[in-house]
Image (cartoon, rainbow, N blue to C red; front, side, top):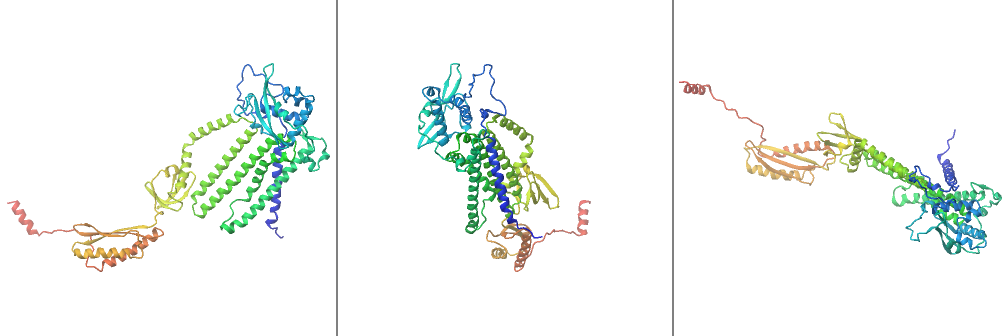
Length: 557
């Protein structure tokens, strides 16, 4: 049966990934498309202190700038004109003959160029943001750009006769709205020809607007992903030819990068494509969540690419001890990124994570106390790998033992001794030891003595020393680092001649061979002179028996 080449399946894999990403984005956005008043006040734990006399609450949810805008947009979405009027400056509306016209103009201006601040950027305090460099009773919650005019969308804080604090859209914003706005702008639904849905709604929004937004997301993601693929292909083709090494950015990072770019551009795209402000406001939080999810996704891809490249370089340079540490760091970095993404996403959803983070901190502290030795060994392994006193395969002396390092793990290191046993040393202790690495030598030390009999002529000894100096300096095994031949000691039985120099050798076995050959060459050189090697000797004095008899007669008359 003929086999199908794997290249045939690559487009299918890409298409499946693309469809999956589109579905994830759309579901994440639409799942948050129903504006719920006060959702941002939801918390994992209620940390608000309960007072015996609660503060009076506004019946229309206008207690804070954030809740005011959330409920105002919901009223617009429900097309409840009477309720919408409750969120506009009552003093301004009393002076208008047709309040409905003001609401219509405001809705039209917001649809054409309204840019509302994200919910979490709007103050959720009854007094508003006192550090925004505005009067204490005013709060900026967005802007309206229509016909080259930029109007600040302001809220004003008021207090009713029952001492209830509430916020409304400021009269200055309403008064500055253009009076001649018309609905002659082609909407996104009209551009896609989705008028046949009529006024039917889905999740509180017109189906035509929701479907057109989904199409906009799909088209935008397709164009971005295709453009990134084209750019990546060009760089992947040219970079190796110019730099002589593979292109470092993996193709797996292109899709999350496209999602991040799309999420950052989608808000402005919806304004330019005349997506209704009610739908834009509803999906804003979903866009932020998707943006952070895509950012975390992209960060995980980048972390994998960076650490995999580092591990490949470690294997290439035979630094096997770094692979396990890099693998650990990669997992820690990915776990940290996931935790950070979860915290940020839940924060964007309005959850209060202060108590949860504090609990994690206390739990982490308790875990650190309970696992001191494990953490000590982990830090020790990092120090051994980072400082690199030894590597796998090096012969070293540590403490009172010596041997060849066969593994540097996360918790401990293993050394094979000359007796062929394996010693396991915790990395916390190993990193604190005095380690002598024999394999780190760039040359080997030749240090020996010649012992010559004292019967030799001193002039002959002097000539021998000078000639040995020249002999070692010119020997093929001796490098130019340092060479010394000298008379180091005058003993009763011998002249002691000291020889020092350095030999080039790749390892200790080669050094031992060269040292043996050099010693033989030195002995042959010494044989040319009128000297003799001094051997260990002992003088014994023997007396005759007659001498002992005479001694006895003298002592015993």
